[in-house]
Image (cartoon, rainbow, N blue to C red; front, side):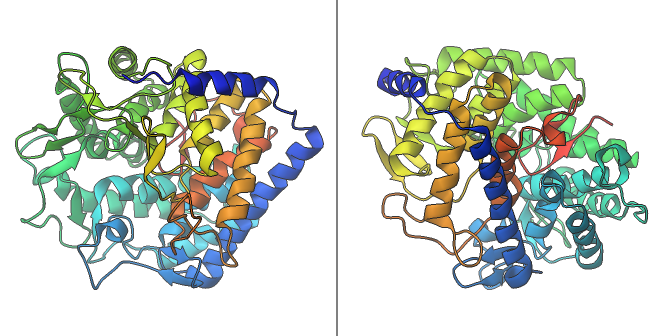
Amino acid sequence: MPLLGWIFVLGLLYSKVTPMVSEERRLQLRDEAREMFEHGYNSYLRYGYPFDELKPLECIGRGRDRQRESNIGINDVDGDYCLTLVDSLDMLAVVGDVKGFEAAVKMVIRDVHFNLDSRIQVFEVTIRMMGGLLSAHLLATDAKLGFALPWYRGELLALAHDLGKRLLPAFSTSPTAFPFARVNLKHGRDNTETTETCTAGVGTLILEFSTLSRLTGDPQFEILAQQTVDALWELKTDVGLFGNSLDVRSGSWRYMMSGVGAGVDSWFEYLLKSAILLNDETALSRFEMAYSSLLRATRDNSGAFFLNVNAQTSDLMNTWVDSLSAFFPGLQVLAGDVENAIKSHLGFYHIWRKFQALPERFDLESKAPLISFYPLRPELIESTYMLYQATRDPFYLHVGEMILIDLQNRTRQRCGFAQLKNVVTGTHDDRMESFFLSETLKYLFLLFDKDNKFNKLDSNMVFTTGISFKYAC
């Protein structure tokens, strides 16, 4: 495995000379993060709604690509169900917009339904749509948080329940415990649907499905998700690792690359967060075993990165990391391993410093991007926020300030924010995915708003892969 200690050493030295972020500056950054959300959200409402996304360069909305149903880059996510609105519901609460939250809930009740001829990815619609609806339902019914709506009668929960039932054919038509990756919301699963699915896709349903079951009294969702988790756990290799993708029909691995990035990432996240949210000792034990295997078999010599190895042999498969894996330092914080989280975070911090963004894939050997676009992802900001919450080290406020300035300078448009097509040249793609408002700006705002009520809740609240925060129920 390549020796990358230079990244950690440089980060350690740099952190010692980082200027302090004053209290006045922190408040300025908090207000700027809120303004960024308002700019993006109001641009979506003005130019994009009721489509799923905003195209920030053209200042128009974009929904499902009905002309090319095979365009899964769009159609796995967009189903013509007002995605960005639903995905932003809890962010309105985080920034304290009581009137905006109520107005958005009314819009969802009026305009969102799922009787749609849309073939979507089960994973994406669960974390973004179901998660958003469940979170907003909890907000609308919990008077302690200040967002309870006296007129509300559970309409968002009913929508989430309807959505959940439309996802069930992914499970019921499978010969194993693993759901198919995609279903049509109106017609169920097509017989020609691919049998390949990723590890994260099947392992990242337990939080939303369990919450749905416990809120509605309909146990089937939690039962199915737990069966999937149990079956996936049984597939771990002799060295304790998990492959990247598997076959739904055979229930066996198809691709043996293992790490903490795309295809596997949120499997580990939901193991730990389900232990917290659901008070599940088995999930906690499983996460601890999986984490121990990752430390032993995939971490590079510097401790800064988790590499991609063969799940059966632990042999190195390549020398790149992807931007999705920047979430892992935050998960290490949640697991109580702050010392190693600091090392992991510094590696991604230096990649961001080099490019003023995180390239989607970065080669550690050549120190160059392999895939150069940055779709406004939240993962590094999430980890920065978690580390600041754990340490109160002002270095992480500095990191957040750097990221905020770069986002403003490089991605802000007249209508919202545009993802970078190339982090080197600074060219743009005409897309603002829903997670930019619901996650990227959420963590940035909470980093600087230290007195925010959601930073002070003494509960088993967790933030999820999608947008939502939830409580045990």
